[in-house]
Image (cartoon, rainbow, N blue to C red; front, side, top):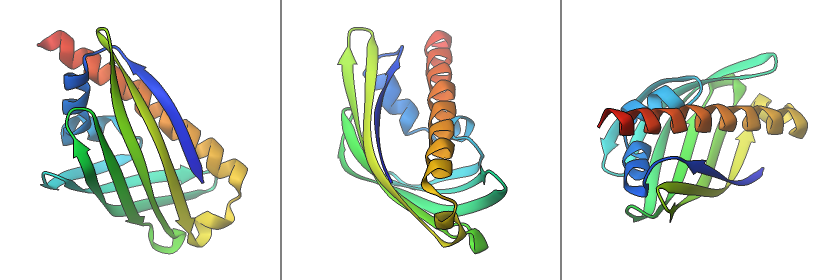
Length: 151
């Protein structure tokens, strides 16, 4: 499953970059995120609960950053195991473009699901992925704007 998009964030690029690398902000923005912990400058461990129609799964996994060009871009790789539900893994290239006082976050990636999750059907997986992405970007934008206002 491939995905691509862009989001306008009402904050400067340096602030968006810092927020993308802040486990506390990410915990509050990733839908279903129960825990996220930095293991090293370029890796995080996370536990995320996701509901796909009638099937819910809690994924335990690792997020790693590569090709880091701060504060412009990186490649995010993720792999998580959801027990009997299966697994999820993927990569995403993230690029932050300065546009005046705003930042355009461009993303392009690919995800792979296995086990029971892979049997759910493309339409359900696409709609769930879209819902999760919309929730993340809405919460992330609000968190960055709130942090900017507090500083």
